[in-house]
Amino acid sequence: MSELLVQTDNPGHQQVLDQLSAALGSGRMQQARRMLHGLHPAEIAHLLESLPRAQRNILWEFTDPEDDGEILINTNEEVRASLIDRMDEAQLVEALDGMAVDDLADILEDLPNRLTETVLESMTAQQRRLVEAVRCWPEDSAGGLMDTDVVTVRADVTLEVVQRFLRMRGNLPAHTDALYVLDRYGHYRGALTLSVLLTEDADQLVAEVIQNDSAPIAADTAATQVAALFEDRDLVSAPVVNENNELIGRITIDDVVDVIREEAEHSILSMAGLDEDEDLFSPILKSAPRRGLWLGVNLLTALIASWVVGLFQATINDVVALAVLMPVVASMGGIAGSQTLTLIIRAQALEQISKSNARNLLGKELAVGALNGIAWAALIAVVALFWFDNQTLGLVIAIAVFINMLFAALAGFSIPLILKKLDIDPALAGSVVLTTVTDVVGFFAFLGLGSLLLVAVS
Image (cartoon, rainbow, N blue to C red):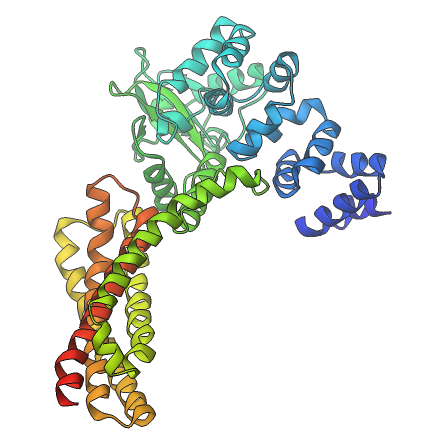
């Protein structure tokens, strides 16, 4: 009954995961196998990533060998490596047989050299040439994303000739919405959309109906920029050309969706110092050192903030209320700074920041920080006044909060720009640096003013 539910009621991933886990846990292996065979390879890949390693290894043995290649390409790098380790060379060659060139190039990058050579030797000379054409480009570029399986036509033939050619060819590559028009030297001239091919007069020449209003994508274009182009132009596919404007492949929307998802995962996980390719159930002794690195960096920055607090130990001893209110100052600055930091990192990813608008954006963020600083400083001052019945303490924390929120806006704006110039990922290191700045400035301003005003008055 549960297998039927999986196939007809289309349950969510969590429900299927629970059903499979229950079947594996109770030893109902045939039931688990039948449930698995009713799923798409991408869904199986998602399930494998979600299962502990022992259950994952059992489930991997139940997959259809014909689906293994597509399953592998849909898993993250660490899970993929663990699955490949369980395959012999013959199984691996069989799994990768017939895989799209761009996907095959991605997997080959993750294989040991010995296995890479084995897979390449199993290909025909033409297949090897196509794969190497993709592998010569960086993985995060248009050339690394492209598929070399493209359909091209000449501009000097009629639409009827093109239609006959397609009928003889028999099928088209997935996500084909246009044929690419080349001159006799292989240079890209434009696109012939399938809608035009089917609706225009068959006696017309391709040159008469060609669409060349959308420029091709250069092979060295960054993957994130490719995704932005697809979004801006509402593309389903796009031609890729080399520096000589020669067509070398095409990018399709399914590859761009993968880029968008990977970028989103990278942005989220990098802020915690994690890798988007990490296995959810990777070994404890492997995960701990990875996370420990950024915990160590955070400890170092925390010690710097603590050292600043230690400079005012005598002041804190004299005015205990300062110790009670210190976290408020640091927290307000940290939140305000993280808002600006997140906004700037997003703007960097979308390439919205340039020299021409950076000054205006900085002015806007400082103004927002100042306005919020005044408003919240006043409120916190009133709270401190009624809590400790001390007007001077209220004034001290108000000024400190305002200063820290202003510096937080400045830091949140400048840190991503500085890190990017230093070739450091802002999403990875930005939050750590920002926390240090807001803690140090907040504590120094609050305790420094406390030393000048509160201790002097007392």
